Length: 437
Image (cartoon, rainbow, N blue to C red; front, side, top):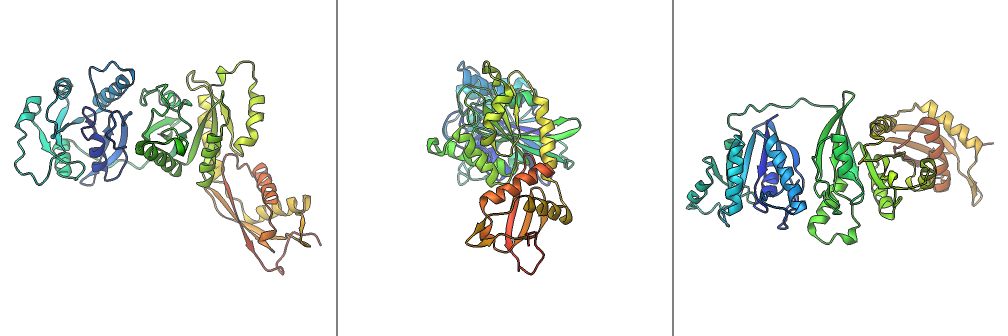
């Protein structure tokens, strides 16, 4: 598929253009330098055909600052990958020394380059762009990304001469890689992808954009979403960080399976539990990945897993090392297991036999002289599993007894890592029930 990369120095409107082409807000837009820190990929359409759009961090070819150097490397990789490059400059500022250096560098790539002169007032019919010819790029389009001015013309100029095709529909599992800042998400992502796609940095909150990348394991497709670290809301001081948080929650919502990365040295923190709560509220399957366990001395894995069992609920935990690439194959094994568990469908006779057995084993307590009676239950949906249980008085279903049913249901039918939804509905007592006479 044809790849179009948007490049330029910091804050010329690259992310605004990326969003304008996609007609939705994907990249974070801000005046803050270095906001788009990783290269972000998205499937885009033009005239009913598809291409891959790549957004990059602002390039400073002479930067020696470690973090800006990382951004530069990400952008250079995108340029190498791209079939066509849209070089964005700022019409309000004019040509800068950095623009000239970048143009010289881009021309060496021998790729098709289109110069997008951004921030044009579409009411100004007399704008003189002749000064921008000094950059040595003949294919020039005047645009305003914010006002959506001449975006289609830019795409036509950029994609002309390339054969765009509609991609074949793929059966893939969407995997959200989530966790607090600085727990090793980018390191794990890179180990899984075997590519320096996300910038790895010790600065908490480095990965602020969510973006997708596919990996094939044993002929099966997994689409990973490398999300921004979920931060405590009261610490999100900027609009950029708040938007990154919203984007992460959106990634959870569209995931089939969530991978929650936890720092072994810190254990399951209060913030980790809040993230788990978000996963549960969105009825998502999940796996807990315990990272950096190799940094803990004289501690057995089985003891550690036992200690965190209550904190992680019904989700399975795997001890890994993202940096040393230990136990990573197990991640894909568990993803398949959890995904299959999510799709379990039980027949009504099987469910009612199970309910009858556990009801006889442990009767619910009497409340105000009344006892809960369960008439029957049935599964009405899967992915995730959803059951309806008909009872005499729904208010008699205590949380402890509901938990008893759910725990036994998981043990009996292997719903490991996946949510189970139970609706309790009142049914007339003349119906058959499992209560003792």
